[in-house]
Length: 432
Image 1 (cartoon, rainbow, N blue to C red):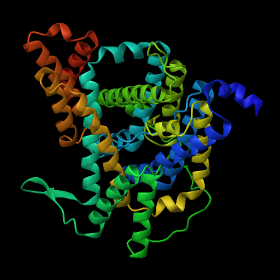
Image 2 (tube, rainbow, N blue to C red; image 1 turned 135 degrees about the vertical axis):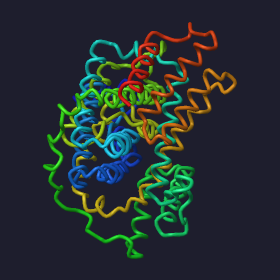
Image 3 (cartoon, rainbow, N blue to C red; image 1 turned 180 degrees about the vertical axis):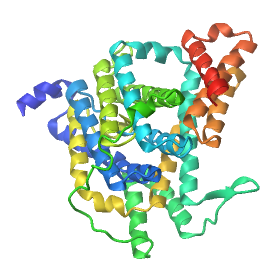
Image 4 (cartoon, rainbow, N blue to C red; image 1 turned 90 degrees about the vertical axis):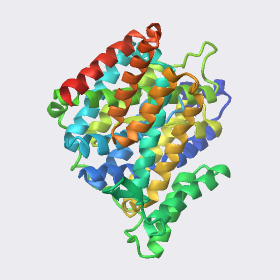
């Protein structure tokens, strides 16, 4: 016990081993929904659902262990919401790429993330991107997730005349998705830490009782990971047409990780007075290595989870919290039958809830300044309407640069934004 306290610095952070363990349980309960949602979403690409379940648990555990042991921060990791949607609906179903090529793109973006973290290019990139675009990207991904959730639940359906229209929301699947969302709202407002997981389980139980889902058991040996393990196609991912995809994976993970680390360490009181994050380089290294490991195992990009703030609120202050979360992900491997019988509409409410949280960033946008507001609106609207995170981000950058330029405010455009805008314009002109 003394060795654990010394390694994680528990005595100097106003916490105890017991508190850290409880904090780990709290964080895990708030993010365990990913082991149900991620396999369901990636299965739409043709990937084996059982193998993705195992890959999700293992990749999450690896990420948590790396973060806890190396960076010693109370930050948990798992395949990112939004990134799995981009993987499935933009790259595979939208662009027609195989899931093996998509995994290759995750691998390459992870390696690039390792490099820009090692050479401290991350700070230059992050500081060069306008704050308004960062907020717009988060909100745009949120809108994209909302669209996916509504589509999967049958709340919105295809219409040859209007493209989309409302489905019959009194049907079982849409009704259960709506119930799932409102259950989460109630549980969150009542500060129940396992709100999302409880919602999914309640809807699943209702489905079982009404014959809309089939009972498959609760505990078993983990499924085989062979169908996805080391199945990535790196050569296919290096095709010139995949450049924007790799960039999108890298870009989203970059900002998602940075924003999460800032939020969690600030809430935990670990951020230094000058705004610096302790062990930032190590945290970024852990995050990027976890993304690479996830691609080898067979899942979309692994990233830091903002749900880690729940564990921090419960008293978590050190890497031991993340270690506990990782151990619980390994334990979850034996609950594959439970994950397998959860219907897609049971997770739609959770996806919509995550989208609501991501839309909160819109309150920080300066809506009085059109050069700031218009790129946000472009990302927000065109990400779901083009069904592509990459295209939404690209169009947002182009709108920002043109807006500043024609307004005589070219001095506000950073070198990084100029470079990215030129690259993205060339992509649309020559590769579309």
